[in-house]
Length: 452
Image 1 (cartoon, rainbow, N blue to C red):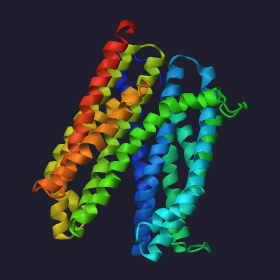
Image 2: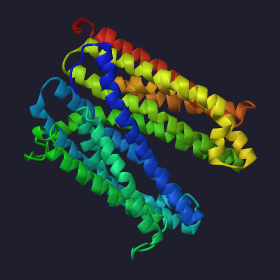
Image 3: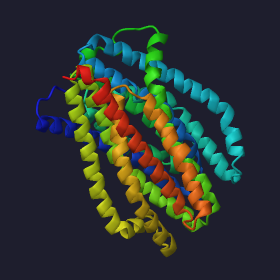
Image 4: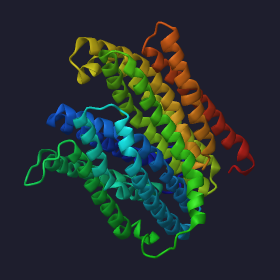
């Protein structure tokens, strides 16, 4: 990543950063899709077990990994300020913290997983598969958390293509390991759906080793001498990482867990409604990869410019990212509106489910447009290391406004299950307005006297 001087230069550099991030996010999305698809082909019970295990793990992982995303703005600001001597120390402390966090999660999981599964009234076979899946996944937890730190460092330097390549390498590895462990091929044990947990764990270790090797040997990374020197644990640096990371983690947790909560509340509706909701939500999550990727790219470029005290450049990048997100969302919304029935047909052939899915996708239009505003703004604010407001806004918009509003619409109007979509849209809109005002304050008020 380098200093840019014109709008065209900034746009070109931003696209070079955001496109690999998008491919990486889609690759990670595809890995979960492969696990689900390959487990489903083994048996319905294995599919259900993996789905249950994944629903327990995903909110925990996304929230905790969000803490480690603090490495991105920390390193990007250090690089922008040309404080390269601090980079290896911060990254190493991030790795130490990742190991510590993963061990805590494993220990807590050993005590709480059984009670959680017992409280879900599951079929015995489904419960066993879910438990075995989580056990298998736990063997890769340390590697996964460490990889998140290494990826944050790689991305902070603007080398998002490297993260993309590592993720793309992981996809065939994961698919091959799934094939061997789910179906018991080439003398490997037949583990069914639980095999996806072990396959994913092995994949995490392999990609972490690859990432570490790239960082130590590849030109552009080797000069930072990561892992070349030993540093003792610094609680002061851990505190600095957690000060930025904990609000990021909680903001992500509030956002991801709201959909788990709505899924549980939707269980009171019939099977057609639940299936349609899950299908529409899955496609909405797919489309969300675009504003999410732009958000992550903005954290990198804004952090780099803020570290270099080029505050006007940081504002320009913010506008580029937000404008790009809105334009792409508008184009997606047009396509979604006209082809929602065709999109619904990808998920089901049942005419009732298809019609309901197409109906829900109409609401997803507004969901998409709200996300297109709030996600990139959130990323820009992280570039300024301004994270407490986004954490608070995520809680208020989803849990204080969105969920109660949806509940009221469902139970006190004739909207039925659509009320939850409307509630979430209202919450997202409030969040977008709140974060917009915060970004305006940061850029126009707090830094006005120092603007370059």
